Amino acid sequence: MTATSKLTPDLLSEASSKGCSWLAEEASKGRLIGESAALRRLAWAHLLGVTSGTPEDWVKALDEGRAHYNGLLEAHQRESNVKTFDPKICNPLAKSVDNPFNKVHANDELLREIWKDVERTFTEVDYLSSTETRKTLQRILFHWCRSANPAKAASDSYRQGMNELAAVVLAVCKAGEWSEASWETAEALGQRLCGRQYTEADAFVLFSKLMSLGLRPMFLPTYSASSPSKTGSMGPLGGGSIL
View 1: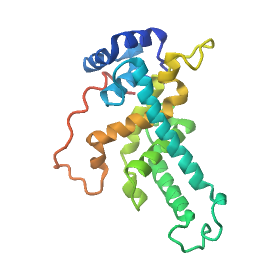
View 2 (view 1 turned 45 degrees about the vertical axis):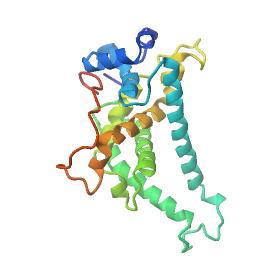
View 3 (view 1 turned 90 degrees about the horizontal axis):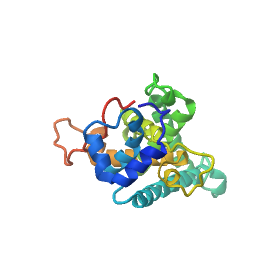
């Protein structure tokens, strides 16, 4: 699979008519390769427990996750705009524990910690080595760490290795983007399911689910490799090379 592949009308039509069980079976048998690798985005969403039911149900579930991610982006933007806060408590010299500058400083530290790994993640893959994609990957990891794995120290919130998992998910979502046609409207099923405008948000949603299925504890400072997992198998996610 390469990030230059796209979800075609024929592939979407087959997935829509045959449903989630067919996508899961194709993934379990390693058939989501070649041109069919573009279906991994939809298959992973189902196998990770994000989507189920009909294609319209898939859209609804994905839209809920996208709204959550957009909310995180908006909240961070508000926090970063220090000019909107009371200057009596929002300045570098203020000692108040509620000083917004403290959060801005913590956010900047976390972003720097993540970037150390992002800029060396799968450098041999053209798509993942572009500056734009690296920034996207940084945002996904940053907002996951802040919302799902907060910690006082940036090195405890973000841990090396998360970058590689998130990068694979992002590449899968990119390769599953809808092959847009100039005559289509935003209401087309392909656009609503896998439009490129949703790639970042969908990658965040899938990465979040992946981490919630037993991977998050592996990145905690107290993790022990001998500790038994409390979750079951994540199931098959495709076949062949991921990247």
